[in-house]
Image 1 (cartoon, rainbow, N blue to C red):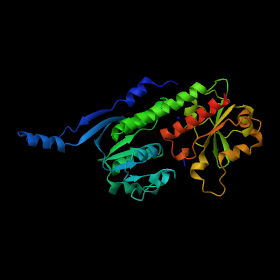
Image 2 (image 1 turned 135 degrees about the horizontal axis):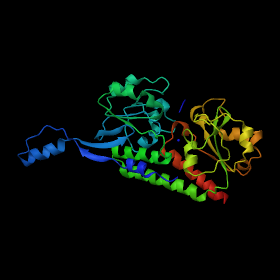
Image 3 (image 1 turned 90 degrees about the vertical axis):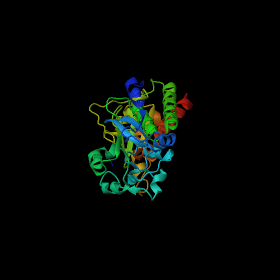
Image 4 (image 1 turned 120 degrees about the vertical axis):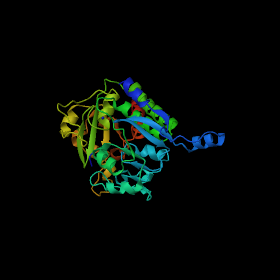
Length: 336
């Protein structure tokens, strides 16, 4: 499978730039009597206009048929009780109840999706992004009357702001503004805990474990730990020229990682999300503990290794990052 400081005012303003509107193109009705006027008001559908990555989008509310293809949103939509008619169920982690909901038409993963299943679902809103962004035009052509909403984190914007923008906009679409605010407040609190407890003199390292191999994750690059590393203000133990944003991390030697002597190691276990049922699967903790090269690294000797939730690779919701940051803050506070 393939899978990004202080918050930017412009990004926050955009996140808040949602406007409730009434349906404006109604045929004038006879409102000469109070009963006729009341009927007209009651029958007019409500709508909400939000701003996504491609501009303003208007959705009739509440949506009656929802399609979901952005795995960053699955946990949030489930927690909010949103009923899905069609989705990339094959891409969902086993931790999400949608995974076992047989009423949801499953288009599969982004590798070979059966997009034709979207048509009979007749969605009025499509949440699309991340791995499925490449199919935006295909989906739009299949369901031209649906409102497409894309909220992938945008290049050049603080990743933390983009996570909050996503749930804020979705909160408007699904009438879950209070719940969205709670998610962003919880996330902000977890990030502030890390910043308050972290000593910049203690260098940190982000790594990815995939197929039993350890890869280096460059600060500010790619997904998951790269952008969070930067936004949390961590001091890199190692910086590699021309590092990539590869979802499997950069292939540098474990000896090079060890030589950088990180006080903290942050880990994303890619295999835990996709290969846990494989008899050959080894958890990241086992791989790291078995590494002879890493045994004398301060982070290993002091037990200062923090793992992202096991389903992160196929989840990546704001809840996932909040959980990880709180775990990191707990470890930082305990080490003082």
